[in-house]
Length: 70
Image (cartoon, rainbow, N blue to C red; front, side):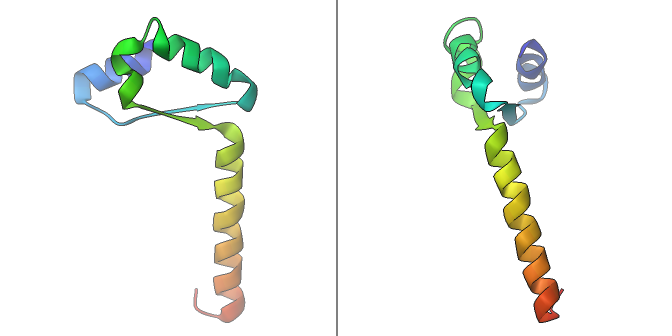
């Protein structure tokens, strides 16, 4: 989390924090405590959502290939 804050401070970066579903409460705790300065700048994404995104994109590409428009 410290490196993400440093990246934001240095480059005004977009911050995406991807964590396993079971670690979401700990990440939220850190963002409301130690790292409250960047709380509004962090997009917290559960790992399960990344898996879902991958599967949906793959299905979309497969469907395009099936239709011959890829």
